[in-house]
Figure 1 (cartoon, one colour):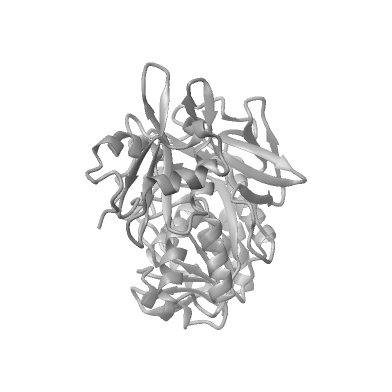
Figure 2 (cartoon, helix red, strand yellow):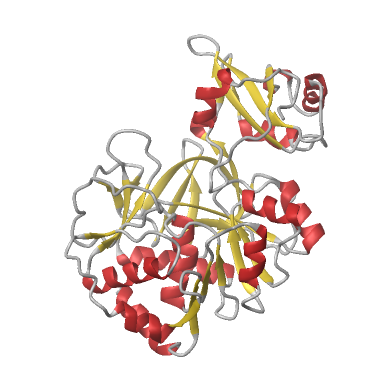
Length: 425
């Protein structure tokens, strides 16, 4: 199915540019990609592992499709997972961020993978005249579904880059007159600070981590670019998308459901996702949370007037003497303080079942008394939700996808080596 669809796209767009690859410094047409993909891969292994950020990644994927091998994309230095070949009918495996034991993969059939691409193209309005500029990982679920699949199944050209640094972004954008720019919040922050958001940007997308309202509003005011918030996950592909033309006013707002995606809130107050793009199962060990065309997330959610609000992870809720604190809510208020650039709120053990609320804060413009931050929060929140301990740090250290791990910060929070009221240099 996937390879047949690709051949149709290659024939329909044969002479049109398909992919610009920095390693070879050339544009590949769809016909050239098709001819190169027809070469034998030289492997009979049941799994194929595309890696990198260029033509080789695309060709490895296409050859695997043609030969009926399972595709398992990997980051450049990521080791191959030691798992048995999945059952017949599985065409794609996505890796998860398991930290110990046997890795758990997410298994997709061909039609499920194609459905995600169809939903993304229809919901976001991707179009061939606005090539995708690839500055996020092609191996990650976000990059594969937003960049690789639209190229191969919908004829959306792809400009690959070997760097997301501001000057590199400017050079790659100069290759076309208009483009689509999918990124993560950390990249949007770097580009707006450097003043290098391409003027050719016709569609701007942010996913992988919560998009701060202040950043969204700053980019809109300074560059005239509306960043569209996109929420998805490895297990179900795209979930919700903010298609509005102006910045959001609520940080919890993820958008409205993707085309052909059905969302509901379960009895545990967590979001449930149904649709043709939901994965078949986990591999090698299935789980009840992913089965029968439904993915039961651990994201606390509300659906109001057709709009999806994500309220944080159920596992991140802080238990303060029997009362529950949602850290994202505290962070949203804290980020309204004029001196706070970034923050992370979490719970640390303070007894057998009790936790204390603590906060790590980035204040780039100098010393800010913790009392000022407490007073700011107390004007909006009850006292029991306000952090009891404050640590000022130079940066929070988001990963390449723009995400912060609360679990990692819980492990290292007591060891932060800085004064409680003095920003780190």
